[in-house]
Image 1 (tube, rainbow over the protein chains, first blue to last red):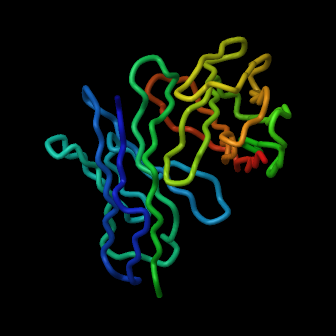
Image 2: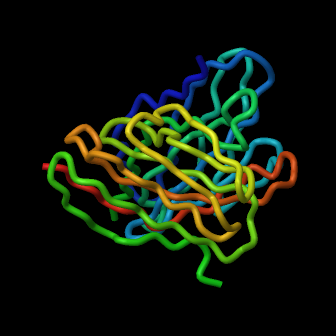
Length: 111
Length: 114
């Protein structure tokens, strides 16, 4: 079965420090991977997807098929990055473009 | 555009009661979904729909019913509430273009079953 794991429930860093949110997956095939973010009192929203290779709000993520990882990185964390982050991949087969989500990591950026 | 709206925001039910969680979207999206979120777990797919009149089961469908009579609305019905259904429920919609894969989420409904 497809799974997404995020080993850290909570990650605290100081403002200006680098941040890496870990995501590992198990998937039979060539996966697409995504990061969703939920800021306080806001809705869950798409942050980035690996196929676009974009940098959104300074975040990047590289798909490493050998390590089955899709870690989210930012070189200099800002306080406004504090949020809940979810790694996700599409359900295989005919599931109507829905996602398997990881349990999430809460990022806290301290002043 | 209001995007995806959900009502109510909070609900407390007693075991055995039934209720309907409402979800609507004004983006003319064909795809709509319901997820539940429990502590320490990611969102899990309950039911989904790929268009009006078409619904299908997700990963955790037991105890829930859905229908899709219009493109805009996708209500989730709890038939006989159980404490195990205490959760936060999210509705989402997405366009039907192949590979689009961006889901737009509602604000969630926090349900407690006592």
